Amino acid sequence: MKDSGSRQSSSSTPLYRTGIGYDSHRFAPGGPLILGGVSIEFDAHLHGHSDGDAVAHAVTDAVLGACAAGDIGAMFPDTDPENSGRDSMDMLRRAVGHVNQKGTTVVNVDITVVAEYPHIGPYRADMCLALSRALSIPAERVSIKGKTNEGMGWIGHGEGIACIAVATVATEESGT
Ligand code: MG
Image (cartoon, rainbow, N blue to C red; front, side):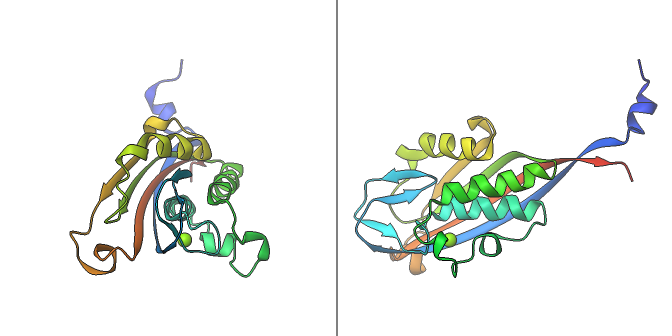
């Protein structure tokens, strides 16, 4: 059995990194609203080149940011017709696959959705499950919180939704 000294000098030590992602989309008439991979009954959807899923986009940028691996716009440019109307959870899965290939795994994500409406409470558990599958982590490591903007500004006036996400990832680094 190795002593603690030799374990400390091991060449493989987990390195934890954190990234932040932000996204916003405006409402456009007609539902359903896609958020965190969940279809929400609502009279508007989020306008965007893809399906407008601001939660998936913010989480994707948080994961890529934690790995200093660019951003969702570089990985899935809106000039590429293939990304038109695209399932944003598929983009998240591909981004996670990209960082997994480099030996990095997602530890947890924490998300805040800022919207006057709809209230996300009834959909929170389904969103956590859908996101956890895309992230290849247990649902217990996905946190989603809903906030209003207290009636202020474009969010308060119901023009759209903003989302902030933080992701922590772990990488087995060779000790240098
Ligand atoms: Mg977006």
